[in-house]
Amino acid sequence: MKIKSTIWLLSMLLLACNKQNKDDSESIDTTAVNDTVQITKSIAPEEEMVTASSNERFRQVTVEKVGENKFRLQGQAQVWEANISWVIEDGHNELKSGFTTADAGAPEWGNFDFTIEIEKKDNYSTLILILFEESAEDGSRKHELPIPLK
Image (cartoon, rainbow, N blue to C red; front, top):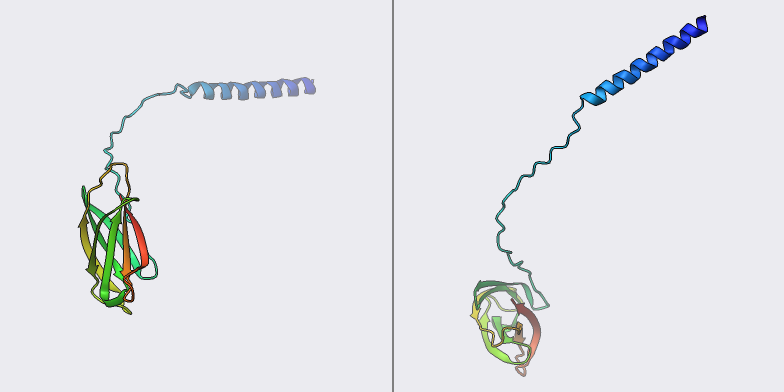
């Protein structure tokens, strides 16, 4: 008799536990709410990254597009008599050339800041600005630093 009552008691406990778990699961709301919220965010135009170009005579040279066909160049140069020469090419032809001066000549590093205006002849071409030091001996280009103009 003791065994029967023990089995009966365990059965009741087991049923009670099952009933409790079943009641808990029924009380939980499992219906999914599928609300969507639309967030409108204005996207700013992509800013062009400014990268600095360098070689043994020019350093920290940056180009900033300040107009449709206008570019501002800044940097430092360590060139003879502070003279900086430049030329703009489209891959085939020299389109424009000129010079500027830094605020100090070699052996010091001088700062420069100038603006150039150039228009592409062909829309598909890439403009390349080449900074260089002109040789005092023969006028040849030395220490060329090519920089794409975008």
